[in-house]
Image 1 (cartoon, rainbow, N blue to C red):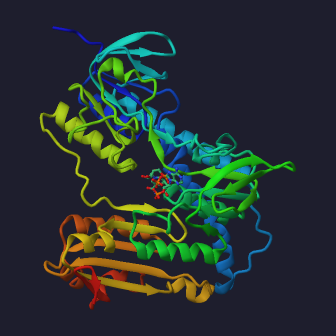
Image 2 (tube, rainbow, N blue to C red):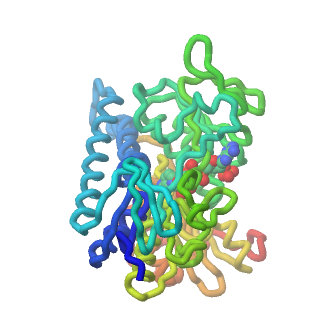
Image 3 (cartoon, helix red, strand yellow):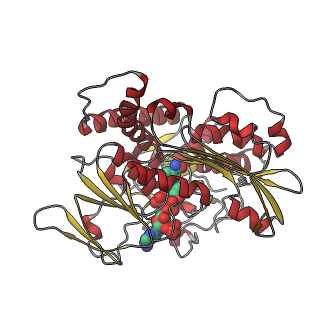
Length: 462
Ligand code: NDP
């Protein structure tokens, strides 16, 4: 019988990889994890966590303004970008330490090196040149920002990677893209006082969300002073003679800005991993092709998280890791469940969403009911801010099942996490109606919209 160095070798120390390695370690398996950069992966090091800290930082400008309506006078408020970056670095380093300790406590060997396949059981550690063997291997190398190499001048632009550590806060920024990252960073930079423009190729930002909340967010961002240019793309970026950059667009606009940021999606990180040597198949985008259990074309090699280009979200990668553990180490074959994944866009106002958008629901169900409320949140009455909240439930008229819930406004992310439990449990609109409201809150609207705002029958609004 072949004797391997490890029962499990994990390539990539992000959310999915660390979870798989740590839990396998606690089960008494001999586990190693290789990471070439920092433990914690995109989410902890240059994604969700630092982003949310920056969102908080950027909200203070509005908080200071709003406070006047409540009797406060805040004078002399100023912002120090370098202080924020240093504070963020400290917190990220603390979290990285927690990841490291979690692995160590589970008996996992941490290898600070890039790892590449030599064959399907053998891995070379690039830093030392050593080779190791493993019975099972998990590839969880994640993804990286699409550099848009076809764009002349792309090398002058930044991506979210650099945005977290810019030496200076730019005075102006042009952000390309209409997805999560573009929208979140447009609001962050605007809140920090940067003159911000977003340019998106489609008709409306956030293409895969409910149109109502997309339009509501668009309006709210423009009212704040963020410029949004739709149906246009950057064609070329050049250096301006006096410093800064010039972006030329397809529609013939010329935009002079300090910084251009590209947020055009993320590509799976599989280049140079030696996947061919291992016999692991990838698709046209470079993503590892997996079956319903996250198993690659080689039976003992699994792939988790963004490297598979399924749903690029941290909790999904963690869930896939737990399913892998069940399948491989607990004799309980478990497929990841992708139904009804709640998600939030940390824009300002925030979006929280789960299930089918109105547009999708109309395509799948002959008749739906839409319960919709748009209102000024209580805080805005005294602050004087003109913001609006949108809450929307999409319901199958035949079964009364709630198919989707979409919220735009403060704490939408927090609300949708809890709504996700009801939708996952298959709750009907009647269950919502039977639920007592919590007063005064914004979320009470979700249980007090008794009459449908409108119905959509066979695609026609009635
Ligand atoms: P998204 O897929 O959300 O958005 C990419 C955007 O770039 C889309 O608007 C897309 O347009 C546009 N685009 C793609 N290619 C081009 C091109 N060649 N020219 C012009 N526009 C282009 O990716 P992000 O980079 O924003 O984020 C990556 C992933 O990270 C997300 O999918 C998400 O899963 C995850 N993420 C999650 C967050 C959260 O949970 N809050 C926060 C940040 C990231 P179109 O829509 O027309 O295709």
